[in-house]
Every structure is written in structure tokens, then in C-alpha cells.
Length: 635
Image 1: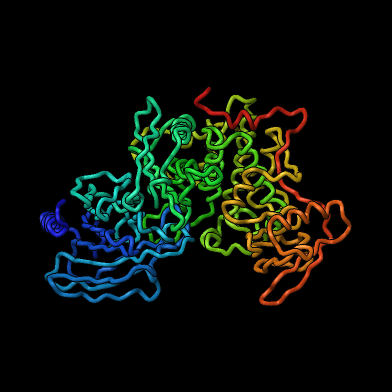
Image 2 (image 1 turned 45 degrees about the horizontal axis):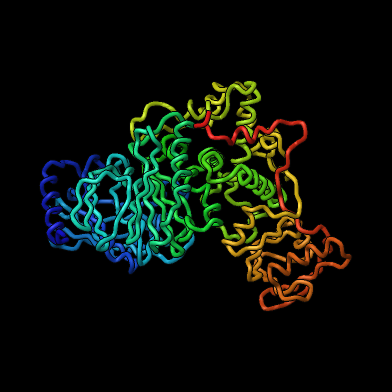
């Protein structure tokens, strides 16, 4: 293995060779300056990532940025608080710096006369919070996810695609890695990547770990390579069944049929399996960054719950990366983003991702219908906040709603444009089919709007008017009014037009859906929202209380803790038993609740039993939902 110090000398020599060719001053914002970036992750198990940078400069004032608005996270949540050890040197001398007084992500310094090369060093402290997105926990004793934006600074005055980095990464001994970044060379645990623009670098995370498997999911005959790079905290967690590998291979084939083209060189599903990292999915053009509990591939309930995750992030390669709202496409990571069209960016992606889960075998048709029923109920009686907050405002306010607490979600609303997007875009699909007597569908729109030749990763922005124009080319209709009516509505009822047009309707009975039960088991939760209005943890902590529900009317609130049910110590079973017994009894349901060290018993005059959402077929109507969820590759 090549010693790191020798490798470092080679990098410095490379910079020295490049510098005479670079006549631009980053201080004056000229483009195509090459910055060397070395990220040392050998102390990732200690939660410290070290960075050294060398950038060409000219004497005078210099402004550097730490990325603030992270693509795909829709908020100014760059983890600036975790930036430590920042130091600048040149010609052996330390150069002082000062943070901007109005923007905490901006740094100012003055480059002395005679200096042509600036050295910067910094540490990034990996947090241990398992909440949030890529700024959350990203390293364990056995693995790490490197998000490059967390480990660099960039000069003001040039667009992200005009700033070039020559990145290298050093990993703990023996660790393997996966990334969409093109490789230049590897020597032992030091990986050198080809020079890349800042926007492509930030768009290309690296997953690495002691336990990492690469799984080929390229369908037969597909010319573009697709793979899953899966890292875990244990070898046993990587044991994917052949059936699951086939489902993800089907996913690649189905997206080809849905969009008719691809816009990347190859694609890497980067999947992290750990109980000690933040759990989420983040889209990138040629990869994704998806993180789930450690045993999500080997335990059926967790596998069902993550079925929609990778399809969602994969769809983003077309919808969100190749095509992106103009307001979400600023040239710098410091410029604010307008999130008003997230109901397309995220809402359509959610619809297509869930549909692909059904088309590929990751979900059964029954599970797909269960999911639609669950979100319909959640967005109806489970969201009284829709009576004051229209869906459009959940998109407009995305940057604050992503970080809202779980308490009072039903009244505040959250980023509902995801799930409500499923319902709206299903209705778009059924409307197109109705307008064209079944000759066309949303697939025709996907081919038109996301089509074109594969020129590798590129960005093609759009506006609301562009979307409406494309839909009108598929099926002429007043699409602008269609969307405005749903986006601006303050009706307490969810938009169920698509479900009803597909031959189904929302109903309730006492049988809990399989997916809801899996969610409760995995997340240690109890969902009785559609009976008495409570969402609880299994220790009795009340996460949310639906405004207007029997529990709310009795005086119970989010943040309290349920202690006893009908004088019996609370357990999930005790609560379910009491709900069933109350259906035939006349006595009220008595809940002993602790609130800030005070105890009180609340009486609920509720006798409706257990109540859960389902889709049931409409008599006399054809089952269009079944036709929509069939694989396209089987046609």
C-alpha cells in the first residue's frame, strides 16, 4: 500500500504543475479554476472527517462559502455547526479570516501579496443525531457516507458547474466503497477521482465500509450499468435474497419503460443499513443516498416499509435532477430556493415511486391499495389542518416544515405534498385515460416531458406553464385550473377523484392493514387515529392527538403520556381490547394520562370500536387501479 505522505507529495506536485496554467483569480470569480481536495475519513469511527484543500488565488480580498442550500433537501440546512478546525495558510504563514456577520456560511480573508496558492484545512464532526437528512449521523464504527458538501469550501463569484475540484478520499484500512464518481486511480486505501465540477461533486456521495457488497441489478439487454452498493454494520445484514435482487432489477427495467430514456452514464443505488445513522433518502443524478435500519433487507416488515424508498429516489434522476423547477435551480448553494413546485418535484415522484414498487414486486397489488387507503385517511380525518392550510402552502413553507416536531402534525400539517401528490397524480393519470378513451396515460407524459437523448447528467429546468403545456400535448384539458383547485383547496376532504375514477372508494373497518401493522411494529407505535384520534408510542407517549377527535374533545393533547386504560396499566393490547369491548358496552372509555407530573382520568364516550382505512371496489366500475399497477415490461 502506498504511504499517504508519499501520495500527498504527489498531489502537491500535481497542483504545482497545474498552477502555472491557471490564470484566473478565485477572488475575482473567474471560472475553471482547479482546486485540489483531499478528504481523510480514516477517523470516521471517531466521527471526525479531515479535509485539506489547495486553491489557486491572487492577492486581495477573498470570499469563500460553505454550502448552505443542499440540493434535494429543500432547506438551508448545510451543517455549518459541524465545521471545525478551520485554518488558512500560504507560504508558511497563517492567514486570518472572519465570518460574515449576516451570513454564517460565508468567510472573508485577504490574500497577501506574493501568494498564488492558498491552503485550507478543516474538520467535519459527524453528529450522533439520527434525525435530519445528510447532516444527521452518517458514520459508525463500520461505515461512513461522505457528502462532499460537508467537507469543502468554494469561492464566491463563479457558478457551481464552473468550479473544478480534483478530489481524493482516504478510507480506513480495508474498507470498500461505492460511488457514481468516475475513478482516476486507487492506491491501497486512497482513491483518486477524476477532476469534476462542484455541482457534480456535491451530487455524487461516496458510501464506504468494512462490510460492503456490490449487487448488479442491470436487466438483460440494458446497455447502461446499474448496481446496488450496500454497506452495513454487519455482514449478516447484507444477505439479500435472489427474489429481492430480481425486484430491483425489475425496477431498472420498469423505469426504462416508463420514461423511455435515461440521463446518466451509469447508476448506483447507495444503500446504508444501520441503526446508528439518520434514516432518509436523498436523490442524486447518477446515484441515491438511502439509509434504513440495519436489518431492512432481511426482515419482512422492514423490507415492506422500505419498498417505496429506492424507487422514489431513482425516479428523481428524471424528475428532480434532469428536469427540475426553475425556482429550485440556483447556480450557487448560497442562493435561496423557492419551493412552490415541490408538489411536482416530490409529489409526482412519490406517485411514480409507489407505483413502481407495485409494478416491480416490491409491493403486492394489495399492499399498494393499502398504502393508498392509509394516506387517504391520513390526509382526510387525520389532517384537520387542511381546513386552514392549503396544500400549496405546505410546499411554499417546505424549508420550515421539514424540521417541525411530530407533535400537532395533524393541525399544523407537514410536507403533505408527498403523499397528497400520490392522490393528485393518480387523478391526473385517470383523467388522461378518460379524456383519450384509454389510448394514453401518464406514461405518455413521462415520455414527452422527461424524454430526449441520453447526454449524461444534465439539467433542464421548467415552470408551471411548461408542465401545463406538456399535459395539454398529451390530452387537452384545463390543467391549470385542475391543479389550482387542488392546491388551493381548504376542504376537509382529501382529493379522492383518482381512486374513485379507478373503481375504488375509501372505507373503514376493524381490520388493521398489513402495512400499518408493520409500521407499528418497526417504529414501536400504536395508531388509533381513526377511532379515538391518538398516535402513540408503545410506552404510552402521545405523539399526536387529532383535533376534533374524541380524545381531543375530552382534553387529551400531544406530549402527554397514557398510563392506564379502564384502570388497567397501559399496553397496546390493553388499549385495543378496550376499544373492541366498548363497541358493545355502554361505559365510557377511561384513560389515565400524565401531563407534566400531574395525573388525570379522561372519559371518552366512544363506542365505535377499532377503525382502520381500506379501499373497497365500487360496484359496477372496472378496476382501473389494477391495470395501472401492472408492469409495463409485460405489455
